[in-house]
Each structure stands twice: as C-alpha cells, then as structure tokens.
Length: 508
Image (cartoon, rainbow, N blue to C red; front, side, top):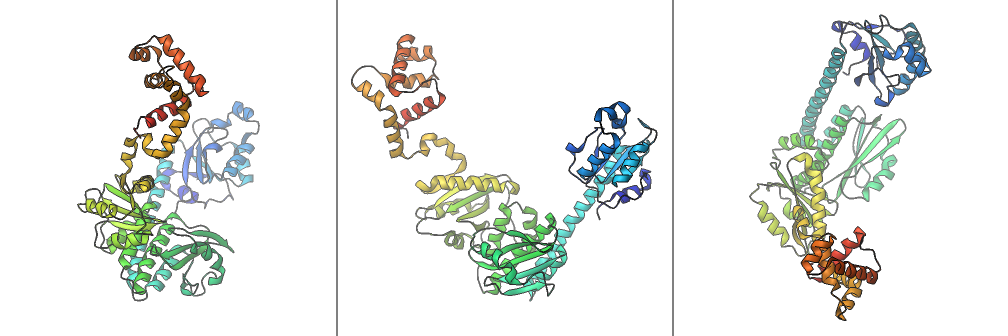
C-alpha cells in the first residue's frame, strides 16, 4: 500500500507532529523535495512532501516576495503538494502562526519536523516505501502473468484469461471475435455491449502490426487491442475501468493478448500456433516489454536468444510478396531464433553467436529481390534501435537485394547512395561549362578545381601540387566561379562540386 502523509506522521521514530487540523492527510506521497525558495513550484510535479527550514519566511524575504505566507501556500496547493514539512529549531523555533493560518484556510497539511529529525530520515522513509511498492507491483505482475499462463492452458482458456485479467486490473474485460461476436466477458454483464466497441474495432481492423486504441465510454477508460498471429485478426480484447491503467496493468494486458493469440491459434487447428506466439513475442520485445516476455517464455519452455543479438529486417521480394511467406519458413518453433511480422517486414532476433545465423542469411539472400538489413544490439533493451537500423539497411539494399549490414553502409561513401545514371547526369549538368572550357584548350579548370578542393581551398599547397603560381590558381578558380555562376566560398557549392567530380571520375 502506498505511503500517505498520515502513515508518515504515524512513524514514531520520526517524531513528526501535525500542526494543522482538517486538511486531508490521506493523499499518497510520490516523493520528498527540500527547498528554501519562496517559489519552489518550478521544481515540483505534484504529490510531493515539501520540506523547508523556513528561510523563505524571514521578514526581508517575505517582503521581497510581496505576498508572504498566503501566496506561498497558494502556490504549493496549486502545484499539488501533499503537505509541508517545517523544520523547527534552526531559523525558526516554531512554525510561524501566519503560515499555519494560511495553510489551514487553504487545506494544506503542515507537519512540524523537530531538529533531532534530519530531513534525510524522512526522505529515506518515503524512498523505502516507494521501493517496497514497486517490488510488490513487480511480484504481483509476475505472479499474475504465471496465473494467466496457467489459465490459458486450461480447457476453458479464453474464459479463464478474461476472468483473471478483469480481477487483476479491477475493471471489466470483453473478448470479441473478428466478426464482432462475443467470445468471453467478465463480469458477465461487463462494461459495454460489443456493438458499442464496433467503431473502434473497425479502425483497428484496417491496420497491420501492433496497434491499439484508447477512448472513454462513460466514466471508464477503454483500451482495445487486436489478438492476432501477425497475419490475421483472430479477435479483439477490450479492457475498461475507471481511470487509466497502470504500467503493471498494461503489462498484464499485453501478456493476456499474447496468450490469447496462441490459444486462439491452437483452437482453430493452426499448426503454427507456437510460431504465432513467437511472432507476438518478437513484437513485444521490439516494443521494449522484455520483462513481460521472459517469464512467459520460461513458462512455455522457450529460451530467448542469447545476448549480444543480431536483428534482421527482411523486405520480401517478388517471389515472396508478403512477410507472411517468409515467416512461415523462418519462424519455425524449432529454430533458435525468433521471427515475426512487423508491418510489411519480417523481423528476426537471433544471438550473434548462433551457428545457424550464416546459413539463415544465405537462405534469405537467395530469395529473388529480397532485401535483408542486419544490425546488432548488445542487449534486449537496445533491440528497438537495432530494428530501426536494420530496416534502414534493408531499404538501402532494395536496389540490389541481398544482405546489407547497417554498419557497412557508410563504408560505401556518399556516391554509393546515388543511382549511377542520375548521378552522372547531375555531374555532367553541373560541370558542363568547365568541361567545355577545358575541351577548347583555354585552361585546365577541372584538374585545378579537383586539387584545390582536395586541399580544402588552401592556395599554396594546391598550387604547389599543380606546379603553378598561387595567383595563377586563384585566376583559374575565379574563372571557374564565373562559368558556374556560383561562389566557391560556399560550403554547399564546394560539396556539390566535389561530389560531381567523384561521379565523373567513375568512383560511383
């Protein structure tokens, strides 16, 4: 149970004394903040117990603030402070009477902190309580995930999962099939009828990948997620309750969706039931829900690929028109990696040291036109970034197909990004005047420009390499600028000219 101000006051070792009567002391303390500022509100987010020794209430400071204790109390109430802890025995022997009066009128609890109680003791007490709450939430979530897994494996799996989930989140849960018919609900008269959810479900039905929708119905906040294997929508899970779901509750909802996915796959006689589960696990891992996937994987006897990791993003070619075709081949549950459709691509998570990884890459590369991007991550929390990199590499490789490693893209240089025909057309168009000038024998502008740019526009070393006087080189560059109609002092112009020279040299 979260720590309230009343709980804190009741701790005998802190020797705290409530100096106001009437204000609510049952609000939960989210943190402890110490400040002697007249206006500490820029550093507050709401829910804090603010501690002060009263330096802000010295006569000079109060006059400078212009509003004294009434204004100070008003600012704290507006900021959502749970209470004010006033340390006595230092700048003040007692809590100022005008502060107590203002706090009483505005309903702000004021607690006297005796000198023998250090502020750090209060901070430690609150911090320990918050840590205990977080540990209890993690323990509860883990136990609930195990219970959901056992429920999914029972004969009445979907019904049991829906019932347990509703109990855990303190709300109602409805499971609706792809056609809009009710599959399970808890309580029996749960939340809203399926037809009330139909407009939001219709929106989700048109989207692929991991999507969800949250919206209000009456006093409840409702969240709807599709239950699918990556290729088809099996059902939709709706969860409603007053207020928003906590982070722990959202993890449980994701776990329920994952388990319902495999159960509905199995109930439809689909031999890829386990592959569908692994595909859902991929999407959760890429969303950062590592702590959710680990216990579920352990419960079903799966081992996640060992870190460090390789992330493959596969864009299907003409002979594999969708990611589904690749997933059926790659996502075999007997494999040591995880594979799942993410949008129009296939994501594969494997251990870098997996001995089957080279063969997998070779197999994928043989699919005509298939582009495979490869990136790496030291650990699971870095998978989302690695997936973005792998997708970029796969898109980069669409022109040629095959396997492209993200870290190797930069080694090709900028010219490797440009279509050869388009690049040559750009270079010839930009340098046409200089090429024509040199062709008529009126000077060697192209070679002079190339050397001058290679020396970053430095006259003496460039002229020395060309074997001419620096003034001659300057005259040539002035001539080049006139022909081009551009200033060679512009970094953008220099970059374009250097790129064009590389392209006509055939280095593209």
